[in-house]
Amino acid sequence: MLLEEVYAGAPTVKSGRHLTTVNEFTDQSPALRPEVLAEATGRMLALGDFDADKILVEEDKGAILGGALSLAAGLPLAVARWYTYDLGGRSVSVPIDSEYFQGTLYVNGIEPGDRLTIVDDTISTGGTLIALIEAVQAAGARVGEVVVAVEKPENGGREKVAERFGITVKSVIRITVDERTGRAVVMS
Image (cartoon, rainbow, N blue to C red; front, side, top):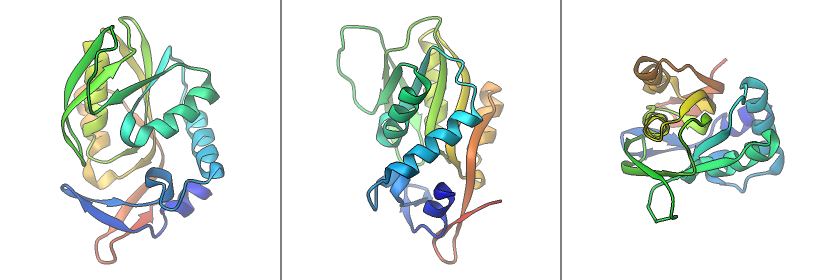
């Protein structure tokens, strides 16, 4: 499958506290082929229920995938950003401590009572998903499910989300990083 091919042997860089893969799916290096995005979208749709009012993603690496899933599922897309601006409506801000970033995450477009499917490209430490779930709750909405394309289980993100919120993160593939070679390895 293409997603596994993209990750198998992908190089890594040190980003904050962890090694992070660099690849076409999350970093567009090389440029993201439409067939890779289509495969990831299809596999995520098959994995999740998407019984929601809206999809929520973070802007940095999740927006490309979120846009494709929004179109495929026929659901509106809400985007969490690393910066704020006044949209003349209800905005929620929450602290975030992720693999890449510490600061504040700003979410617009979520209304009280909404049921959200949260989508992300990768779960590592769980920091981004924890912030997104907290934003949904602060807006008076609820999370129906969390679906990610890639999971890095050695960083414990799935467990942190489950312990804190009782939500099971669904992942399409799981990877690890071979610290000896600095390359990604797809787990079976």
